[in-house]
Image: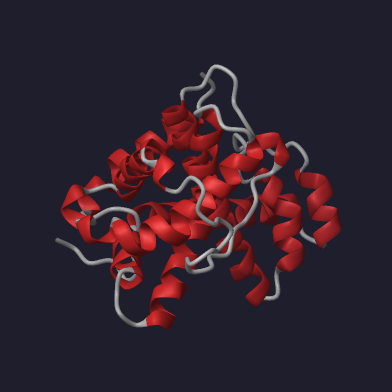
Length: 233
C-alpha cells in the first residue's frame, strides 16, 4: 500500500494518539479540511444553521477525539466515506450529548471555519449529495489556496490575482488581452502562463484527493467522483 507523505488517515492516527500537542494539531487540520462538508450534510439533514454549527463542533471536538478514532482503518479506503459514516452515527446518537455542555464543555477546543451563508441548504439535494458537493468544492478551494501561496512565494501574487479567473475556463482567450496589458505581457505569454497555472492546479487537486485515500490506485476514480459531484443536478 503506497504511503502518502501526509494523509487524512495519518492525521486520524495522530488525532487518536497520546501526544496532546500532536493530537490537537491533527484535529485542527481535520476540522479545517472537513468542516464545510460535515456542516453541509447536517444542514441538508434538516437542522438549522446554528444547531448544525454546534453539532459539527461537537462532532469534531468530542466524537472524533475520543470515541471513534479507534475504529479508523485505512483499509476502508476513502476517508470522506469513512467520515460520513461516523457523522451519521454521531447524529443518530446525538441524544447522548443532549443537555451536556457544548461549545467546548469538557472537550478539546477545535478551530472552526464557518460556512458562507450562500452555501447553506441546497434545495433538492440529498444530505449525501450535498456532502459530496461541498467536499469537492473544498478540495478545489484548498488546491487554489496552495496555488496562491506558491505564486505569492515566487513573487507572482499579481499574476495569480489576474489569471486565476481563467483557471476554470474553456481555454478560449476571451479577456486575455486585458490581463496581458495589466501584466505587461503578450497575449501568447499570458495564455502560456494560464496553461501552467491550470497544470499546477490539476496537480494540487490530485495531491489533495490522494491524501484522502489509502491506495493511490483509487485516485482516478475519486477524481471522477469529484467532477460528478460538481455537476448540476
